[in-house]
Length: 402
Ligand SMILES: Cc1ncc(COP(=O)(O)O)c(C=O)c1O
Image (cartoon, rainbow, N blue to C red; front, side):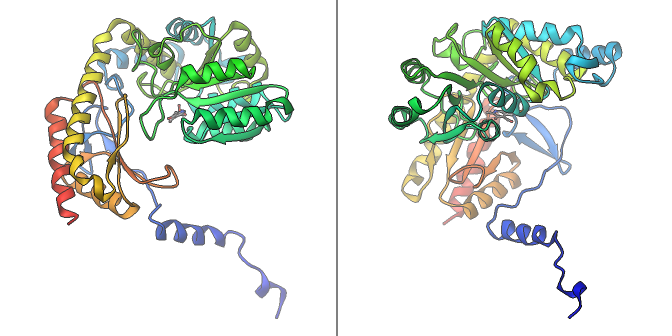
C-alpha cells in the first residue's frame, strides 16, 4: 500500500457530523423573511403571522427609526472604519452610552458590536484563572462562552435553584480570589425571571459580583423599560448589567452598564471591545432613536404585556387537556411563551402544521434547550385576532396528533 492510499481526508468528519445532526432531528437552516419587520411578514412568498421575532416593541420597521438611521448613514457613512480606540469612535457612540446609563440608572455604560461580544468581553475582563464564576444552567450561550473563555473556574447551578447556588459557594468560595454570579434576567428559551433578590442577598454574603443579562427585558419590563432590575425593585444596586441592542431596541450591538470605574476598566481590558470595530453609525443611531421611544411611549410596554397575557391565557385553555400527554405551558411573566412538547419529532410536526396554517413560531429543540418546545414571542403590535389565529391552528394541530 502506498503512502497516499493511507491518508484520510482531514475534513471528512464534517459530513459525518452533519449526518449525525440530521439523524437526531437537530438539523437547522435559516429561512428568509421578507418585508419590513412587523406582525405579518412574507415567508416563501406567503403572508405569515410573525410570532418568532425579538422585536418586542415593534420598532424595527418604524418609519422614524428608519429616517434617523438613514440620516446617520448620510452624516457618518456606512462603517465606523476602526475600533473605538483608533478611528471608530464618534459622538453618537458616547451619546448612546449616556442614554443607556440614564435608562439603567447607572454611572456609565459601554457599547459593543454585539450582545454576544459584550458578554464575552465583560466576563473575560473581570475574572481570570484565580477566580470563580457560578452561573444558572439555563444561561444564554454567550454567557456560558464568556464563562469558559474567562479562564475562571466555572460551576453551573440548576436552573433558578438558590439552594444549589448557595451550596456551591459554601463549598468553594474561599478557594478563589474574585467571584461572580452570572444569570440571565429573563431566560430566553423559557421566558421566566431569575430570582434576583435572592441572588443579590447570596452575592453579598459571599462577597461576589453579580452579572445580569437583560437582553430580553430591556425596553420590555419595568416602569421605564429599564428591565428586570427595575421591575423587581433593585435599581441602584451594585450590579454589572449586560444586554443587547438587537431585541426591543430594534438595532444591533450590545452594552455593559455599571459603575464609572467598571466602564473605564473595560475600555482598557475588554478584548472584544478593544480589538473589534466600533458599532456602525446606522446601528448606533437606530438604538438611540429606539431608547427615545422606550422613554416616550410607555404604552407600547403596556400593550405588549396585555397582548402577551391574552395569548398566554388562550394557550392555557388550549393546552390544558393535553397535560397528561406531556404538553406543558412553561411559567412565564414575559412576552416569551413556551409550550413544552414530549419530543423532537412532535415539535417538528407541530412547527410544520403551524407554518402550514400561516403561523411562524420557533420549534426549539435540543441541544439549544433541554426539552423540545414551541416558542412564541409576542410583539406590542400583535392584535387579539393574531393570537386567536395561533390558538385555532394549534388546537387543530394538536388534534391531528391522535
Ligand atoms: C439572553 C441573551 N444574551 C445575549 C444575546 C446575544 O445578543 P446579540 O444578538 O446582540 O449578540 C442573546 C441573543 O441573541 C440573548 O438571548
